[in-house]
Length: 153
Image 1: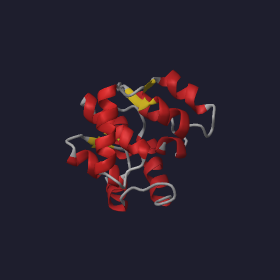
Image 2: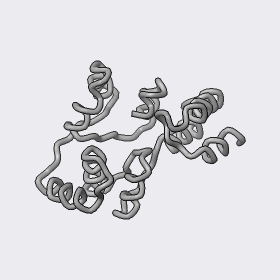
Image 3: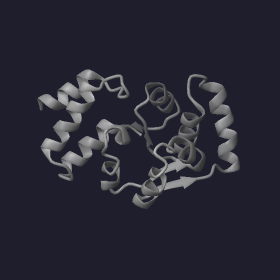
Image 4: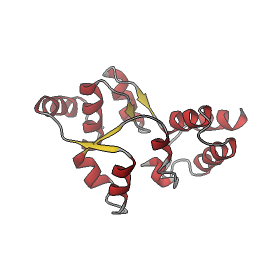
């Protein structure tokens, strides 16, 4: 969603990764704008249903991490049960993921990957970092020092 706020929704899909989201979260979270869901699926976003085992894990994680939303708990459930990286910028979710042995990654990591693989230019990377810096906290929630480090490199 952060890439959507930055009007760079295509950026994550430039990397050769498979992105997975629960069908429920996709249908609810990405309804605005409504045309975004088919576009994301065309780019390779895979919507999945939770298995019975994952539903049980969801319930236990929901009880354990009260600060997480249902969407965040579903994302953590999928990442933990399928042993995959969790893409998030949410601090509480990152902390829960780490506690559960799930590797969290976020927008900064993706933009760094894009830049290091020369899939975006230095100017694009700097522009994105500057937008994050200018919009800190609304809706962006990235550490100022991390962004400034990238701009100073």
